[in-house]
Length: 320
Ligand SMILES: [Zn+2]
Image 1 (cartoon, helix red, strand yellow):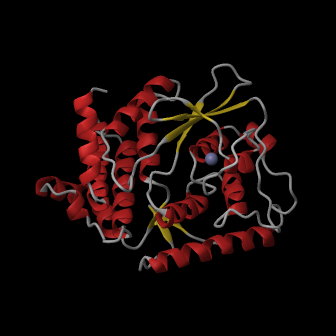
Image 2 (image 1 turned 30 degrees about the vertical axis):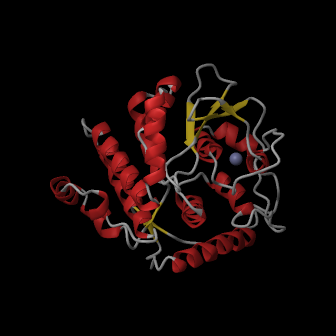
């Protein structure tokens, strides 16, 4: 990076307030997704719809509220989006997203690039990442990518995940709970719910996963591609060896989405890795832990004045 660009970035960082960082990054992500969808299929269009809903939701729970009109300030584009994706505009203020926005971007990139092209996928994400604005709060910016793979089989598929791309404690906690209930594999959700929301292991529920040694679960810093050791929380969740003594809130790391995708596609690994504790097989325990997570989620939504209709966008009705 040259000196001029360094100075320029510093200047930008100094002056961008939190709202402006959110607005700019939201806009960059939407434009990128529209560009990636230039040869639309049902699946890729679905992902654009999902990312719009999610970004508008996050804008809506931001303080101050950032409206879709403030995010997409080109009127022609706004009207066009409203015409093609009316449900995202209608339901961002009543339904919860299933996952954070960059999970949708990641899905799109992996879908278009092909899961085996790891270098290309990481480079594309890094490239997009450098276009995102930074400020006091880094809204909508993931920092780590994780790749999981069953190395017992030659040429086995790679499964990706990113660290949470929301900013601030409450949006992150909302997205983790929402993903537990709708997006993540149920064993991964069990592991996360074992610790959610206060990083304390519940005495009555132990969904901890123990990934077999043959599973590659490797994280990289998106900034410089350097390897990133699992944090303590990921050690708790997946039995990953680490010397880290600090941990992010359980569910925030790239490992979680990546292992969830691995489990959804590799049943053999899942069966070997899943919790052996009889606390998770008892329906009353699962109900209790889900109630605990739901209550916390509802409390956070209330704080944000969000009245939830018990649905995840699109088309999942929440049941305990
Ligand atoms: Zn972690």
